[in-house]
Every structure is written in C-alpha cells, then in structure tokens.
Image 1: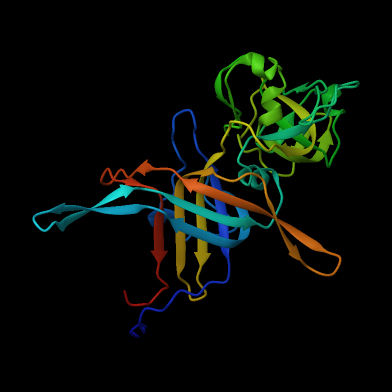
Image 2: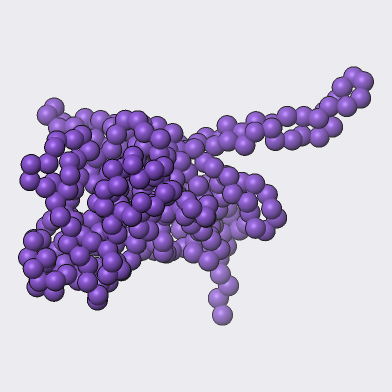
Amino acid sequence: MSTPVLIGPMPPVTRRIRAYFAPVNRTLGQPAIFDAAANGQFNLAAPPAPWIDLGWIENFSRKSTSTFGAVNAGSPATAQVQVREQLSATVSFHFLTWQKLTMALSTGSQHMNLLFEASAATPNGSGGAAATAAVVTAGSTSTFVALAAIDAARFTAGQMVAVDADYAAQIGYVGAGVSGAYVRSAALVGSSPDYLRRITFNVARVSQSSASGLTLAQPLIAGAPAPSMKVQAIAGFVDREGGTFFQEWSALFVMPGEQGDRILYYYPRLQSIANAEEAPAQLSASLERLALSGSFRALPVTDANDGETVLCFRSYLPSPMTLL
C-alpha cells in the first residue's frame, strides 16, 4: 500500500470571491446559520438552503474597527489586562449583476417592485395605483402559481410577477419569506391591499403561461404560495434615496483556493450603511460597465458554544494532504 505524500502549508492563492446571502428573521432576530464544519465544501453553484447565490463579486474589502483598551494598575501605572472597548466591523464590495436582491442589498433603504398600474393611475415616483391582482388557487408550488383560467390568461411568458398576500393592516416587519419593509401604521401605506406585493422579495420570471397557471423560471424565495395570496405583474424595481428602513441579511463570502483550499467569511447579520451607488468601469471608448456598490456594517450574535459576542466567523479549509 502506497504512503500518501504530504506537503507543507502553502499560502492561499485565489482568483475570485463569491457572495451568498440569506434572509434574517427580523421579527425574531434570528440570522441564517452557516456551519462550515458541515457544509464548508459545498458546490459553489448549489449552496445549501436558505443561501442564495449572487455570483462573483469584485473589490471585496473587510475592515475591523474594533478598539482595544488596557486596565492599568500600580505606580507607575502598568497595563495588567487587555479588554475590548468596542466591537465593530464593516465589509464592502461590488456586485457584478443587477437583479432584485443585489439592487436591494446595495441600497441603504427599502426596495420596491414596480407593479403594473391601473388605467388612469396617478403618476408616482415608486409607482401608482396597481392593476387588479389575480387570486392564487390551490395546487401551487415554489415554481408554479396555480390560477383560474381567466386570470392565467392575463399573464404571458417573459413577464415578471410578485406573489404575496393582501395587506391587512398588520404592523411591523412584513413580506413573505423576507422582511421587505417595516410598517408603522396602516395609514402611512394608505391601507393599500397591494402594499405587500409592492415590497415583497417573492418575485420571479414567468417561463410559461397555461390555462391552469404560471410556470416560473426560478423558485419563489418564500416557497409555495398559499391560496390566500395574489399575483401581480411587475415592470421592474425601484429604490429610493432616503427612508427609515434598513436592509438586514446574513452573508457568506467564499474564496476558493487554486490549490484545493477554501476561505469562508460568514457574517450572521449585515446591515447596509451606504445609499445606492454605481461603480462605472470603462470597457471600451463607447461602453461602460456599471457595478452595484455595497457597504455593510456587521451586527453582533452570540456564539452558542461559549456565549461570546461576535461579528464574523472566518473559516479555513486546508487543501488535501497538506500539513497543519
């Protein structure tokens, strides 16, 4: 039997870094969990649930702004023990693709869907009064929205849709699957039954429309819609400079090493600390690429293993057959 050849530790070498985000349960204050011991070597193209792959990113930079202090005693005063005075960390990077989630993450405020409007709707910066929603029927899945034939005929392949319940005067964090807004009073949102579909992350592209419903090109983030929900077509997305809502998500950044190793940065709670900004890059004399700039502050969680307060977990998975 041959003896495996071991090599000494090597410096990590990586080409790119990939970003994954997952919703935080804002009502319960529960972040999405990532366990590097169980899932550290996952297929980068198929992350474990509930993580969402947002592709490769650029200009990744993480910074610790935590401060340290010393407890002095004696004469002359001499440092006897060191303490953390402040725990603080930030992370920033550029998203290379524009989509619902990357746009929402790269803005410091609320993100909305541009619902198809009713005829003669009053113009408004974030969209006017919406067209009538279609009622979801029984038999839906995360990739199929069951509708009555008369309602299904209103939609066509290629359209984008938002699926969520009617707003019914609830207060606090709202939105199916993901907290898309915080409602302080029903009056502020005009008690509009379409408000949840205006702010929901439960959106998808229609790949096929039939008499029984809509087949989606991607699964809904909140899973199979309940029969009480409704669906509306959307034209696109809009965010705003200003507002009181802050996005909060769990984040995972993966650096795959060229030699089989892997570095992972898991931030249980990130909140945006920058308003919407684009980073232009010249491609040619007449072409410019626009990347979305994201900047975030890490918020604390408690590690169940020892009760310590932490902001980020950095994991390193060495390449096979290297000494430790």
